[in-house]
Image 1: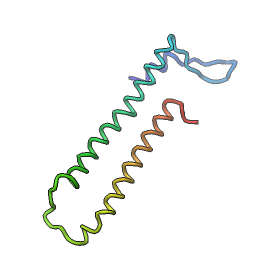
Image 2: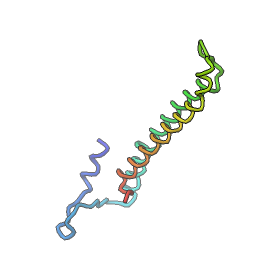
Image 3: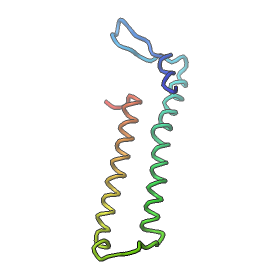
Image 4: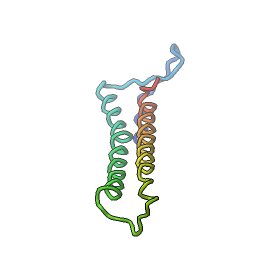
Length: 107
C-alpha cells in the first residue's frame, strides 16, 4: 500500500525516454523517503539489535550456566563470538544495501 504513492507521481517522458518522479510538493518526496528509511532501515535494525542483544545478554551477561560445561565448549567461545559478529555484519550490510537500492542512492 505504501508503494502505491509512487504510481501517482511517476511520469513517462518521451523526450528523455524513461520514467521520472514528479512530486506536487518537495516535502512530499522527503516525507516519503524518510518513511521508507524508517520502515526498511531503522525499524528492522532496531528489532534485530534488540533480539541479538537479548541473545548476547543471555549467553554472556546473565551468568546462566548451561547444564554441562565442558572444556571444549569453553574454548570454542571465541568461535561463537566471531560467528555472531559475522551474522550481525551480514544482516546490517543486506539491510543497508537494500535501503540504498530502494531510495535510488546506489550508483
